[in-house]
Amino acid sequence: MSIIRNERLADAGLEKIKWVKEHMPVLSELANDFSRSKPFSGLRVAICLHLEAKTAYMALVIKEAGADVTITGSNPLSTQDEIAAALVKEGVEVFAWHNATLQEYDEHVYRTAATAPHLIIDDGGDLITLIHKNFPKSLAQVYGGAEETTTGLIRLRAMEKNGVLAFPVMAVNDGLCKYLFDNRYGTGQSVWDGMMRATNLVVAGKNVVIIGYGWCGRGVAMRAEGLGGRVIVCEVDPVKALEAHMDGHQVMPLTKASAIGDIFITVTGCNNVITGEHFAAMKDRAILANAGHFDIEIDKRTLSCAGEGPRRVRPNVDEYVFPGGKRIYLLSEGRLVNLAAADGHPAEIMDMSFGLQVLSLQYLLKNKGTLGNKVIAMPHELDRQVALLKLKGLQLEIDHLSIEQKEYMESWELEGHEA
Image (cartoon, rainbow, N blue to C red; front, side, top):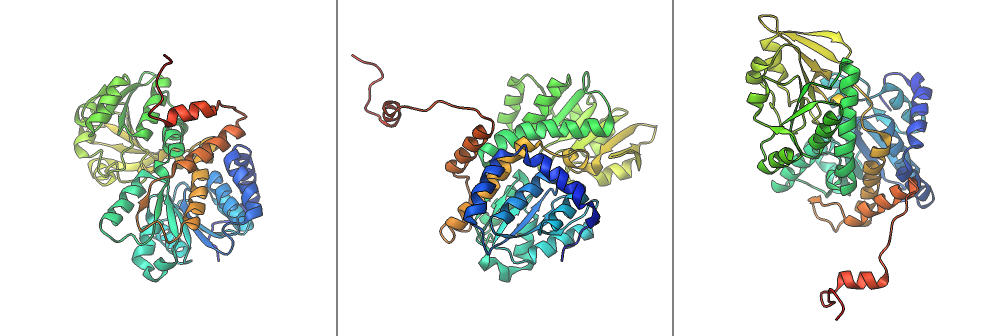
């Protein structure tokens, strides 16, 4: 039986799902196909993702494909109670509610894992690791999983390296139609959506410190620059640091950037990125936000000890007052600011990521028993399929190689010019 906050919110949630459906042509095309073929008939699918409207639509597509679907949230602050209620009304089992305590969150994930799924969609690796630790007898029947995030893949590759990963996992996060769009354009837009909703402050003219210059960091920096911010990038990877420099951003260590930054955004997937020495150097009214998966990038414990607080001064804005009166503001309790303080990535962007998720489940099913217990690179044909479906939905046409051109591109013997 589902565990949600308020089933009476279902109609409001269904309206939200209806809205995103109109902007997710890839999933809608797959839904049309799967409603006839029912590829997941008789299978149990467990999902641990940010529980909002776009995720809900994907869950309903998988249910339409014949699966028994159970879902939980991957972040206590990103779960929307009206969406949870809507899914229950549509026949999906849900264990989640907004602002769950850590104990409640763990129970929700545990109950989802306890359904003994055949296929899994995960965000951060919480569900997959829990099944390995607490339900070892269920592992043999799992055909495979699909992981949405960089953080999750780090954990799963460590499991593979240590020889404990018990089934194949698709690296959805590494798919071209995921990181080129979701990580860059999705994170880039939604982080600033959350930032501006939470603070109602201008970005133009401020020093914006982006910590981490992967695809998500690139997107956040790009949009900060477009809003008029002066971007400073902090990196540990020399290649990414050089790329940030060539993209026109200042590059410096965080210890130096701490003294001049107005807004700090962590996008690393690592822990204790902003710590006590950085808090001490920051100026009055510095704003801290996290766009990494877990709330571990900003050292909240040290922040609490060093300053008086937290005191909630606005929704999703906590104030810490240091000796001498300096104030530092932490957004969304250090959790994902784009989902805790806003609605996450745009529907058009998540359409591609969730299209890859659904196709990954189908790929795992078709290839069960042959992939090995490892993290699987995203097959190019799945990226291509999603891209073609997206172009169709956008009513965009592209060119195609002629037979002669294909032969030229595939041969090493053809000369580059005529005699």
